[in-house]
Image: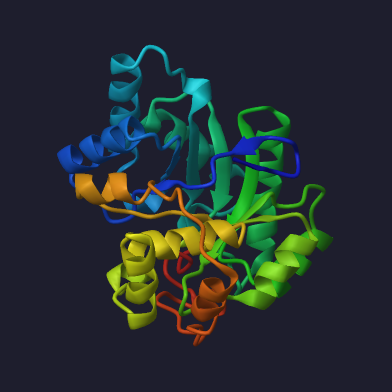
Length: 281
């Protein structure tokens, strides 16, 4: 468990649901992840599966009476085309309905609108209202660079509690991570497993020493860096394996992984993201 700046505890690894668009696969994967011990599920409107995620959660809770809703930590995100104050408040209620939940643990802005940050400031104002109204337990952002966070700080009353960004051994983002740490912002890692490109010889070698897979080595690296990874899989054995991180990487092994960094992004740079913002004022 990590602790957010407002004292709310957040599980240190989450099950990601990006690109799991088939209803049966999504529902069963979410349910199985919870059965394997995950207590944090990461969703988003743009993934087009919030209904299926909600069904997986409901099935798990129905089958597991000793686990309550308050034992789970559910995240979802407002999409780019829904940015704006009133638009975000409506988008939140729509997500709540699709997930079939009474509240969300963490609500995030999916991307900054770098062409018109005023829209993003209005979106953040809506998140602040949701937080103050106790409809969410925590609020945060995704894909915010340092300058986005600095701009937001000048136009807000609550500091983001989380920044979810692309982090993996090939894109370690040391400077942004250090800035977030200085502001007490928890950093979550999307695409932590390099979208499956995990067979780097360094990772394979370290894995052999510990009797672990390269994926487990990467996820352990995230945890030891106080990052919160969001691994995604629809394969039951990998869903289970990705949570079995009961080993410690040595300083030398951590340093070897640090040297793999090459500032290589798999996704868009936040300053170049335009998808979803086309029709905003």
